[in-house]
Length: 374
Image (cartoon, rainbow, N blue to C red; front, side, top):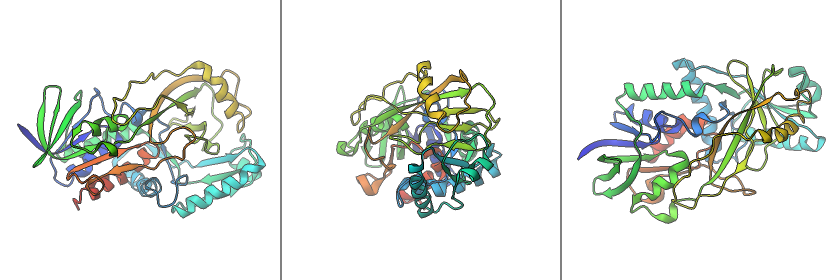
């Protein structure tokens, strides 16, 4: 039977970052991806935003890894030629009663170590963005945008230069804990590995449940939330990202820019049926219902009344693998290493939604620490 030191399940941005971290430490690493290309699910169907780290409870993994990961990511982009721009973001209050929530977000961000946050009055916000309608705004200068596909290619390039191998169109079907690690099998292949990193995103619970001997009570349910995006078929008058205050399950229908200056709006939150622990992750419909444009337009006009009629066109959708459902408090990242489940060499990454892209390099460091690799 063939052997490899480490297997990473999933070639999204986090799986690639983990593979890079392992390979750069001289660990023979195989990346197993069920699709025919890298990053085809959550990693390529998001807002491509580098988050500052202001939304998450102090001390949470999301707060710690977002702030650390953002700093690492900007450095990585600069050294690897990954297109990005530190454009900044305005989170807007559209009613006077919301100003207190802006101030609370500023305090939360500062507690997390985010520098440069400023609460602006209407006049100051409109000096930055003249077409913005608001009662006040929170400026986050550390927020940016990134070419997520270029990032993943750069991570893969580093990993392959260090000896990692990518195996596309291969799915893990089962794994067995053995005396010397794991025996893994898929469609026509079987191998031994000392380390297994479960970075399967939407299917992470299913992968964990396929490991014979893994404690089933530790496999979480998944609450998938579809996020729809609409493109703007008009010139965007904004130089910065514009966000409303957060809503149940997401950050609100916000305006983001790509690196060419084209604007898009989203995501909204469309809850899908929950997936019980360990059950198969269902394929999702990537199409955006054009009828959702009316609700998008209503939300957008709260901060941009001049949105032209008929300017929204369906763009794309993505799925977030949430660990908490509608109306529940947002769950933190759930990273289970040997300290949590008692199985040497195995790390499960559950609920890696936003800010997973921003946090990818810090998440990889966290995985290495969980394995006690130094």
